[in-house]
Every structure is written in structure tokens, then in C-alpha cells.
Image 1 (cartoon, helix red, strand yellow):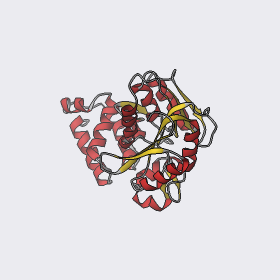
Image 2: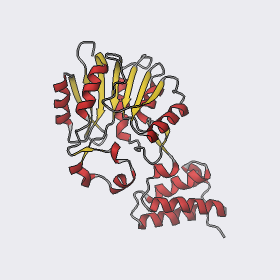
Image 3: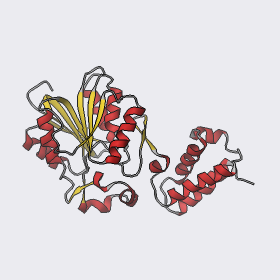
Image 4: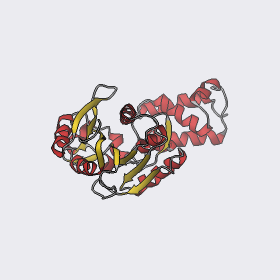
Amino acid sequence: MNPSLRGLIHEISACLSEQGVDAPRLSAQVLAAFVLGCTRMDLLLHSERELSTAEVERIRALACRRARGEPLAYIIGQREFYGLEFIVRPGVLIPRPETEGIVEEVRRLYGPDSCLRFADLGTGSGALGVTMGVVFPRAHGLLVDTSDVALRTARENALRHKVDSRVSVVKGDFMSALFRPRSLECIISNPPYIGESDLSEVEPAVLAWEPRSALIAGRSGLEAYPALAVRAWDALLPGGHMLLEMGWSQGKHLVRILRDVGFCSIRVLRDLAGHDRIVTAVKPGGAT
């Protein structure tokens, strides 16, 4: 006799807990809901339902992957960001809630009907740039990355959220000459910013599964910012804004880098945990 939905979730939760998986019951529920094509609320409403052999086998197979430490987002192939579902896969950084602060700040700076021209440098899954296209329906953006896996994923997400006619995905790095001088109002980026000396602070599962090129910048963690700042300075219109995610201890260093390039009105914003997380800066010469 096959277990009930409640029984299988209890079984998988216990197994994941023994393996030291974070939030084991949540993982079990998400995997079950994914296989059954339902919501987590449906799991509660139909907890006594007896599962078929095929359903049990598939849920257990996914649970084995989770027990080995594979991120939940990679297993189910998606992750929510700013209330939108995004395709993710191995080789692409999993979007984090902290990055949503960039979208919030851009929305504070620009009205919803703004004909904003923007670029998302190091776009990864495209979560940040595609979300910009959704919340600014008259905006046009360029999403840039060096990874073929990331570029394919970002294009799929642009199509999924119906912004592909206004958001282009192109291959390039922070030094690529992809933009005309003074052609953009806004540049956003969540670049790699973990330093090699800070690896002990990073969750082992993150280092084991997610792309290091999207996480680790070099020895200090600041290596990506100087080139990014120079490229942004060239591409931004006077009065244009740049918004960057950063590590919690990098604020004063990044402020100095941006000031040396010529940016003004530099502000450091905190995330919901109270940590420095985003820096914003303005290219002088226009309305701020």
C-alpha cells in the first residue's frame, strides 16, 4: 500500500532533516507540490490522499537529490523573484530576495510610465532585468552576460514574461563596448562580489552547486567594480543612475571607487536584515 501525502511528506522531512538540509519540511512540501502540480495549500487540503506508485517514486527521487545538497530551485527548475516565477538551472545563479531591493529603488527613482533605457550587467537568469521590463512597461533594456547557459535562460525568461520585444539579451562582459556613449538612463548589476578570503562565510551548498564565476570576484571581492563603474560612466546620460549589489562590508570601498570615477550622490542602502547591500550613484550633469 502506498503512503498518504501526509505520510510521504513526513517521511521525506525526517530524511532531509537527518541529512542536515535546511528547512526540510518546506523542501518536502515544495517537491511534492511540484510533482503533483498543485499548491502547498492543496497539500494540506488533501493530506490523506493516497499517492500512486509513480508519484511516490518521483517525489522520492527528487528528495534524494535534495538530500545530496542540490538547491531546491535547480531541482524544480524555477525560483520566485519579485512575485514572478523565473526559470533557473545549474550554471545560473539562483536569484535572491536581497536583489529585489534594486528594483524597489529604481521604482522610487522613475515613474511607472517612464520610457527608461537600461542595462543589466551580469544578468544571470535575467531575473533582475526581466523584472525591470515587467514593472516598467515602456522601458527598453539590454541584458548582458558571458555565460551561454545564462544567456539562454535569460532569453527564456524574457519570453515567459512577454518582455522579449523590449528586452534584448546579448553576450559580453563589463568591458565590452555594447552601448553608445550617453545612451542609458539606468544601469543595474548584481556582479560577483565574494572575496576569496570570505569563502568560509558562504554556505557550502552555494559553493558546491552555484557557478563560482557569478559569486567570486577575486581576492578582495571588489575586482569587478572598477571596470563596471567605468563602463557605466561612459554609457550613462548625465543624471543617469547606477545601482549595484554588494557585500555587507564593501560599502565604504565601493563608495570610494565610484567617487574616483566621478559619480556623485552616492548612497548605500540596507537590506531587510539591516546589512549594507546596494549602492546607488548618479552621473552628474542632469536632474537627479
